[in-house]
Amino acid sequence: MKPTFAWTTRRLLPALALLSLSAAVAPLTRADESPRPPLDWKPCVRVSDDTVGRELDQAGARCAKLTVPLDHSRPGGRTITLALSRLPATDRAHRIGTMVLNSGGPGESTLGMPLQTRAAMKDVARRYDLIGLDPRFVGRSTPLDCGWPIGLWLRSAWTTRARFDHQVAVQRDLAERCARRHADVLPYANTRDTARDIDLVRRVLGERRISFLGYSYGSYLGAVYTQMFPGRTDRVVLDSAGDPHVWGPRATRGSEEEAERALRGWAAWAAERHGAYGLGATPARVLATVNAIVAAAEKRPLRVGRYEVDEQTVPYIVSVGSGDDRPAGRAEFAATVRTLNEAAHRRPADPDPKLNGLLTFILTSEGSPLASPAAAIVCGERAAPRDPDTYWNDIQRSRARHPLFGPLKNNIWPCAFWPNHPREHPTRIGNPTPALIVSATGDTSTTYEGSRAMHRALTGSRLLTLRGVTAHGIYGTYGNACVDAKVNAYLATGALPATNPTCRP
Image 1 (cartoon, one colour):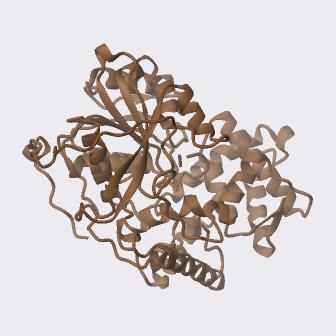
Image 2 (image 1 turned 180 degrees about the horizontal axis):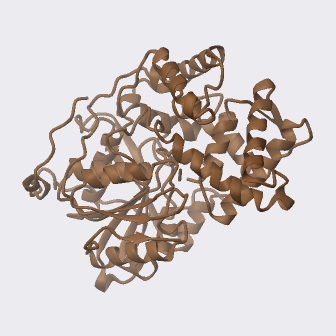
Image 3 (image 1 turned 90 degrees about the vertical axis):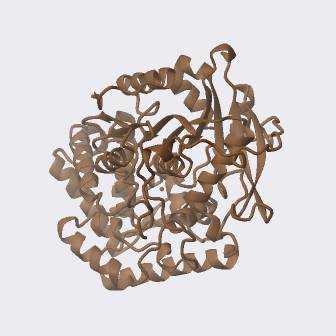
């Protein structure tokens, strides 16, 4: 979902045998390195209102299309195309190599990411070729759109079995729409095939090894790449990494407490600004306002501009909005809650551009081209339980302790009705690849405990912790000078910290 689903801005069986240390440095075979046709780099702008393409061109980047097999086990069969951008190193005399980027989601376009990454890397960016790669079925690569009447499928089950059963019907319909449109390609929308694509990018660029920077789901993708293609990475940064052993259709389970802590933190901030937002003069009163909004939406959907926002949508908005403790993020969420509060009192409530964009993405078909490939990748990762009672029972157990977020975090997804089972087992991460993992202790999407699990799985890694912060997507994004400096030092030298470092706000 850069939130895991980190959809407001930008974010899973039997175990496979773990690779040994000797496997991690296995030499590349001649077949692995067979020549690939060179890419035809061209200007990135496509149409007159192509803002991303224009900014890439102005920065000196160029774009290309790479043809790859739909099914990597059949290299001579059906093909799809991948869209790439390249912002070349300007200090060619001290060039380190190529860095492939992924902004997460899954399903987020990464084509324009070299621009933000160059700014984050400061002077060290001059020594890298930065590669933005729209993964298969995402952005300007061969698309996958299930034609959904809504966008993001995440909803709360909320109070009654009848309303949960309604969600079951909605999620089944979404899966069936994908099956009708894309049954032939859905088996090939998954992380392992995306990792294989990345290795073809490495080969066509003529690199023996690549560096990698990924956020959220992109961290999982990077870890899968290190497992599938040992010895082919140089410097690896995994920001806001989740637990690699649980990523998939039920990855949001277990993050209820983090979501509640973040909401309480925001409530304290909003209470100090009651004069500006009118949401309550104490944290308890602010939280009571939020609960009253949810209760009002349960009785009747809230009218917010042209949208109807019901009790199945409000908890998602609250979960995402409270997950950023920077002043701008908290102010944006306070404005959202103020608007929802007006709607709860049946007064005119027009969304600001931020809330309008989120509601459009969640509630309308305009979100389908973005949410469809995300669902395909998530559902293609590992099999989800098929029995709705499994989800309902989990919801009821979680609701007792977490009445607001339990029904959201444990709800059913379209994966329960996905037309195909995954073609392969999920990748079991466990190898000594050197990597720098970056995580905030208050991350509500890919939790800090998830990042610690990634650190344990990548035994050669270091975990860079940003303590006392609620955020998702840290390096070059949150604005912490300590984190940015430590990541850039690693990218410049290739030397990981001797111990797991800590930064603070």
